[in-house]
Length: 593
Image 1 (cartoon, rainbow, N blue to C red):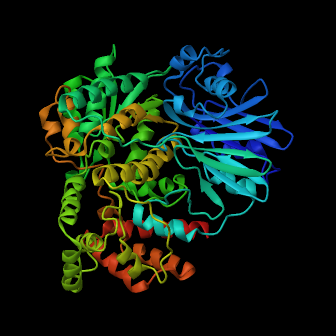
Image 2: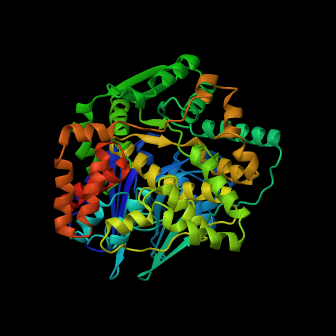
Image 3: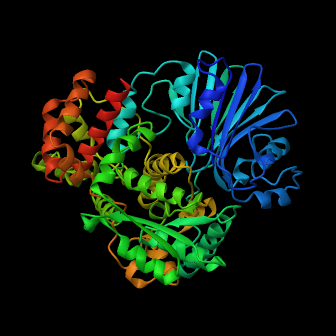
């Protein structure tokens, strides 16, 4: 895993200084390459082929490559496509595939990646990002200036100014935890969406999709589903153990990370390293006992950390700064604490459980919303009209449940993602004028829709960006076995009702029963929670409100009365996510503008 940058103009800052901003993403080596007005930089975290030959920018046969990520099936690609590689790295495979297939090789890759190939003879930039958004890719393209990077900061340094606030991104963030689509908080700076590639030539930029999920159903038998899930997951974990350095695991104590750790331990010839984080106070949020139970079950070398309130407060603003943009997930702070310990222990790469909830219906919300959709299907137009006319006035507009019912009656998208914070009604109360944006068209099969939209937004835009920014800021690579595209494709082939079953993660729990204790399988799902709300209010009290009001006095976008209502509610542990999103944005806005 690495940091990459490239551009086609004379930047405001020297290339070497821009590369330094990417150092945490790749502390083992850095390199630059210049050709006419085209410049490329790379910082390397050495995981596969530790020798100098695999350093970047990599140049072969008039082709320049800067690559961030891992191609897990690179050995299969070399053999299966008869590629003539001079190094032992997965990086060179991209160059050889490009030489053989031009732009048409992306669907052959199984990995986490963002990269740029510059074809010197054709003067073409070919840039791509993996299917689900594991690795970041930001770019700027104005007035013939094209620049891309793994981070936003180098782009701002290179262009020499801080772009204005993207108000649409702010509206999306308050609803979804993060800006979605190609938006960032900065006007003029975009992000390449997952499953997409850029071709930049003659000052013209085009973006195309190379992959989309196939939702055609072909698996209706439970035994067949379980066999395919298990065999594909086993291969996925095995592929992600390909490394020239030791691999550890993030172990939360939930089903996903426990199953991954258990499979890894069975594949490993020695004890594996597992890492968990909990809390010194407010232990109701902690999952350490379950993580310890699993570590004893698989006999791992287990590392158990406890985050204190002081640890949280001391690192809070630094962690927010490392995220580059406001991010609504407070789990970034305990994750950062854990990653620092992993780095200090000498581990460079870890397996993580992201993706399971989205593809195997792990959130309790799925069963709840299934009932909403089934109820909607049972109503005819006359019944909807009657209910809308007679119930609308009695519904509390500020609760999410009333919002879902109103969406149901008005044929609007009922489920917008697991991570929905502010509803549209709440944004109307907050904003003086709500910035609007085009929503994603809902799929006809509501089970597929819920899984798809969470894979795209909650996972792709929110969770994976958090994990990448935090882990790579600590020079740690994370690998996600549940996000092997073969496993994702299988999950969408399974009949929705079979996948939903009678409990969350119905099919995966049956697979997991062969590997992990029943106590973990049958426990109540917690998620990666923390006492962030309690600690912030205990430490900062009314300074929290004053920060939000100070930012609002500058940008003047919000209604002050509703800010105060949210703050009052958050003190009582209600609307705490709404408050956190506002506070996080306000800190960022004051620092940047």
